[in-house]
Image 1 (cartoon, each protein chain N blue to C red):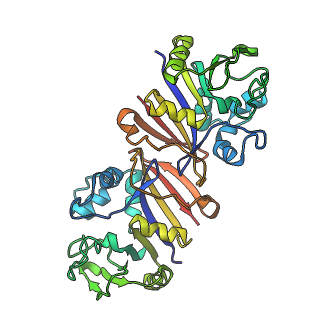
Image 2: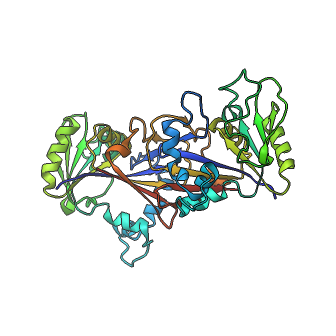
Length: 215
Length: 215
């Protein structure tokens, strides 16, 4: 059965970040600090840097990193995460991920901008641009996923939209043991999430706190 | 060497609570939910309910509960925690803890109210009322503690005052895996705490996340 899933990076003080790069700051210092433990994993080093020598951490962080894309049949992301806010006037913009993005599935990009044709990429990723309500886009993504899962890729504003609408079955939080003091708040309006979703907590070797909410 | 310590109960979304009971709600639902794992420990059941049959949890939560009062030579608390806001006009008010409070040390109560005589209680606790600056009260409490520690008991506003002034050497957070959605925010103004204090994280059998900041 298709589940709707997301993975989010969070600081102890509840500030979330997802990959919303800008030309000025490709990733940003806060993003790097929040994702440092993930970026150190064997899976990340393999996917992003193409390292096949087995370098990278292999503990609890790696177990979660390996699960990120496992069993995912389609993805939904916001316009900012795809880069439409950074390059609004470039009709040829194809995202931040090069010719072969790491999704290997249909990816639905939420946008209120002008219609764009779908973008087939190498390796099975196709970007589709949709301005419909999130429920409608989710229905399309669910159909495309078959019996696999739909992943809400981010950014944090998109993630919050789906969470507040009660559309998410599984939330995986990676809480870095730092106090960012700035960013986008995850929790506003989500009080009582533990009443609809069972919670588990776990600490990785890196000190990262993994929290899972599962409906 | 005397350290300044505190233990705080927190929700995942960063709302803190410390014992600030009111006549209407002796503890409050949120407080009970935040402290449920602590209240289940063998130490708490012994101290509060006088149970000496060894009932209560004995895992990681218990290890921290047993350490709460260990090595503490004096305590500082806010007026609200002592109850001065709830009973401002009762000169005979002696706190919420009965004839023999669990502190067994001098306890300095911060107040802007009228001067009150010190209150010696059974078991070695003496309440002193002070309207001086927190640095001054801390100096007095440190002297009284000898080579033992000073504990900032709460409530959360008092805890934040000491934290923001950079006066705390060790903060122990017990984060309950719940999203309260209301309360007093701990983190405002504390961004970068991990730069002055080393952080460790640990999850207890109850799912409670223990975070320690140590200077």
